[in-house]
Figure 1 (tube, one colour):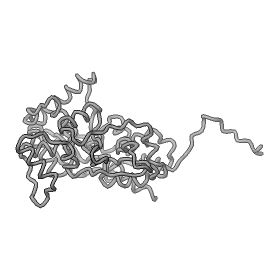
Figure 2 (figure 1 turned 90 degrees about the vertical axis):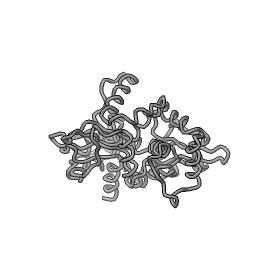
Figure 3 (figure 1 turned 60 degrees about the vertical axis):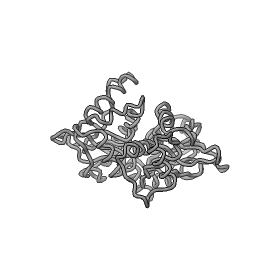
Figure 4 (figure 1 turned 180 degrees about the vertical axis):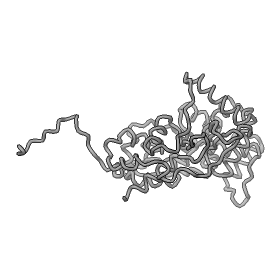
Length: 330
């Protein structure tokens, strides 16, 4: 017989929530915001990303008193290819800013970062209000948007919500979201994340050629494989930071295998870590395990390999949110 008393003890129960109804402002509370001045040079802006350990930052134009875009490593990569004349932009596709940029690079003049904002066309400046529900933003992330600027009702930026930050939050609070448990138990094969043709380069490919391939195909990463097709490593747009640091432009002419080795060595010296994070996951893994590995390694994608170490797919953060978006209404 019930005595009408709630016997749940404080601290021993887990509150359950609908994760899709969370307000995005909650996920960026007290976030230190890295902002780049619109008139900073591209080199100085790259240094800001490097020192702050972020892959992108909003650009603020104090003269116009407004944010004018985002600057990320894919913009930097496109800029490097333009400077080296490894990329042609059709005249019809050139904006006034791009023409100004091309003129300045041709004259070897300093280029302000505002001209390079979203040069790659991969990451437009998107804003959402702090009260926006997470479910809507997850659908945006599943469509390929990597980050959104979170604004308060006065138009002030309160933080930048990224795919990585959202994944980290969901994984840390997973016990509070029971509706996410079923999908976590599903295998990558069940979710259609294996047997996908992925873009790769061999270890002998020149780094510059790999960057051109990424730009041409609009991807942010390539698998580096040996002659038998087994995974050796990974080269991504974020690796451009190692080229910009101390302007190691000679690294562009290294082979991908040499480059991956140098990046591993550099990281070991700078962070004291003996091991570069393993960027692969077995095709038989569960979705939950894959998300845990993405969270732990802080990378944006994992290569899916079979038992012979051959790449059979890739799981990017965009893929993760596409899958989660499909479960929002179900």
